Every structure is written in structure tokens, then in C-alpha cells.
Image (cartoon, rainbow, N blue to C red; front, side):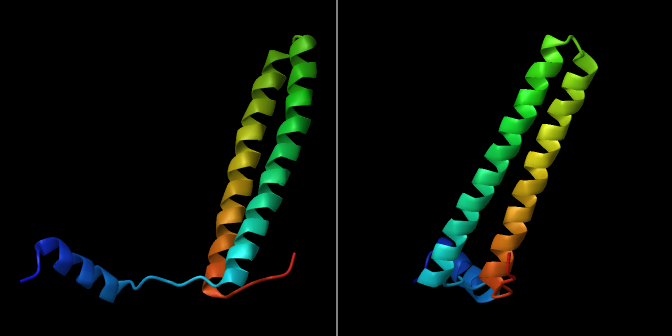
Length: 96
């Protein structure tokens, strides 16, 4: 006799089976992660330098604007990464 847990896991597997990822896909996913990590770091460095300059000049409104822009750009790049990863998993790979 199966436990409730085992029955639930069987139903879950039937409704959304586990997707197998090939070694090539794993490599491409790792490459995407690395590429976007670098993009995010590049934007952070550039914007943090601008934030530092604005803070030294006493432009606190500009500091807040730049910090908001940093958060926004980081979020946008992270969302773009997740979209690209999902496309790769789904087999809809696009160049770039």
C-alpha cells in the first residue's frame, strides 16, 4: 500500500513530468549564467561609480535616481536571463 506522499508524487509526475536537460543544454545554461553575471557586474560598476561622483557633489536626488536605475537594470537583466534560460530548456534557442 502506497503512502499519501507517494500517491501525490505520482499524480504530480503525471501532470508535469520532470524535464531532462542534456549536457549541451547544461553547458549553455552555465554560459548564459556567466554572461549575465558579467553584464550585471559591469552595470553595477559603472553605476556605482556614477553614484559615488553624485554623492561627492552633494547631488542626493541624483544618487537616489541612480540607485533606482541600478535596481531596475539588475532586475531587467535577471528577468532577461530567466527568459533565455527557459527558452533554452524549451528548445527555443536564439542566437546572441
